[in-house]
Image 1 (tube, rainbow, N blue to C red):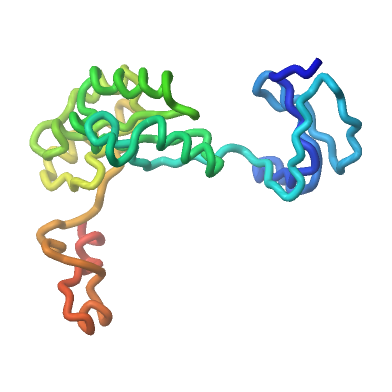
Image 2 (image 1 turned 90 degrees about the horizontal axis):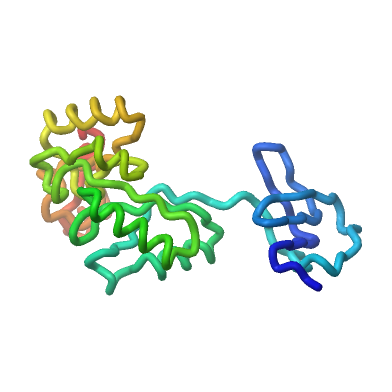
Length: 220
């Protein structure tokens, strides 16, 4: 009888840079944990395990996406926790961090809990929420970073909205240091990039399109 909690991944290219492993072999997984590694392809099959042919495939630790847009709640026509996590899993990602460009934005514990609950119900992989830096992502007032940290967020970001208030940014950075959670900032001086269509340079000049200068990011 085959145990559905036991998998033998046979004949794949096993890569683990932390252990300097890059070789063909078989990997036995029991109850979600690696049980053993067999180098080469001589491991005899065991009828207790689900035998999966991994020839021509790569077996490696799951990828992590630190910045993805699941857009739920509020913009489900663009992406959902269900569809986004399934797409990530197909690409080899086992952990993704979702940005707070939702409606309402992830700037309070209720929205964090909604995302976490939906991730438990419909997510295919581990989903870690990133909360806003400012309420509403508008850059005027700092969120309650202590409460949001306690609710399980792994960082703070206003995503594509740059934090233009330097005093607010300093306050956010001071709080983030105490919480040991990062600020993920979108570096852009929007006064310099306003109405821009592409990178400013020879191509934008040739196409007669308003460009966005590199200094708009470098100065921020």
